[in-house]
Length: 233
Ligand SMILES: [Zn+2]
Image 1 (cartoon, rainbow, N blue to C red):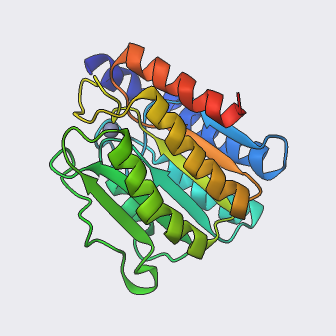
Image 2: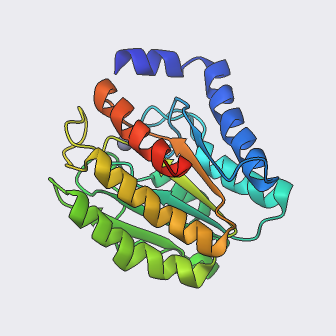
């Protein structure tokens, strides 16, 4: 943890993380790649406008979403966040915005203790913020159910032009900060759900950006499973 925080304080590293996400958006939106995974740190989904929070400095996925809209003229962006922690910074960024649908599964009683299901957005953005808090020990079946029951119908109604993933793997079993029990096979299944949405609505365009994951060995295995699924291998 100390090492991560120390590294994250290097401004140039934070900027490189955002730049990596934007380069991936460019590659996917120009058709150079069908999808992309950004192995970047620090993570971003807790960052809003107030400096470092929860190891996050710049909200990589939020900047990527807005960049895709402004640079590539995409109308609707779906952000899927399966990190163990709620993406409060991302929710904050788009809470009143109907052009970005934010879907998050997370532990409600963990940091940052936000993300209740009744937080659905406000104004024109009401209905475009979907929180699905899950209990301790959440396994593949339970998180997959959340995706099929809550994400898929909302995404089919929303019809995203691009799908972004806040790919946090602290929801994996044996993580040092989380207490979910999602397996590497489970992350492959979640990836397939997202890819199916993208295949239907957004020309298969998916940009996945690393968030948490604090068991180094487990993180590597989960990312391998995720990326292999993205590659279709
Ligand atoms: Zn996390």
